[in-house]
Picture 1 (cartoon, rainbow, N blue to C red):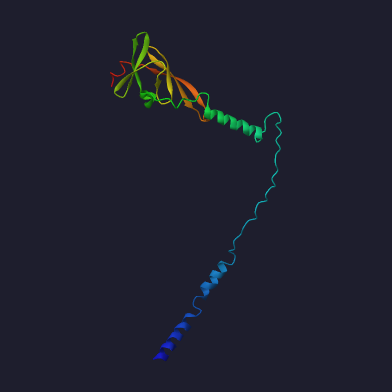
Picture 2 (cartoon, rainbow, N blue to C red):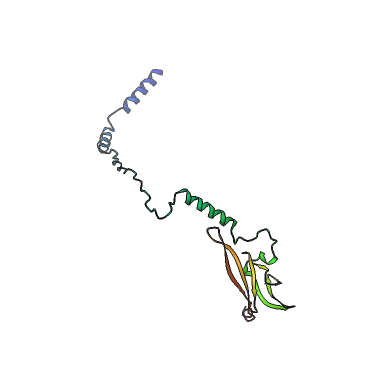
Amino acid sequence: MRNLAIITAVLFLAACGGDEHQDLKKELKDLTNDMRGRIEALPVVKPYEPVPYKAFDQPDPFGVAKIELAVAAAAKSKAGANAPDTTRPKEPLEAYPLESLKMVGTLAQKGATYALVRADASVYRVKTGNYLGQNFGVITGITDSQINLKELVQDASGDWTERKVALQILEADAGKGR
């Protein structure tokens, strides 16, 4: 029985080794003979040639003097001549954006002119020197129709610049259409 199993296994192995797929193997070999990877040559690298700085009437942008000048300018802008006083206590109307504040009227009392400003549901009495809005806006003048402000805003370079704005009085007719 054991011999019969060995003989059967040998016959199966002999059958697998035939020339049955030789034509497919030959065709595959013929088709792939010319399939070789082709790599193009690398481009020639040009040598680096430095360009000398020839603008003698202008400062060298990479020189030490230019860097020191930029560092001094940065230190000045951080301190800033126009920088707001961040240590002073904030007034109540500085919590609101200027666009949300509405001037609703004026009031003259003991020779001083006050403006009435509405924020949310409350009305506040302000005078020249008070602060409004979130851009460090100080009131520079009050008329019957507007409040003039000087705001301090920071530009892209970090410098503080002054900007004059006005808060116009809320017209009585404007609220009737709503």
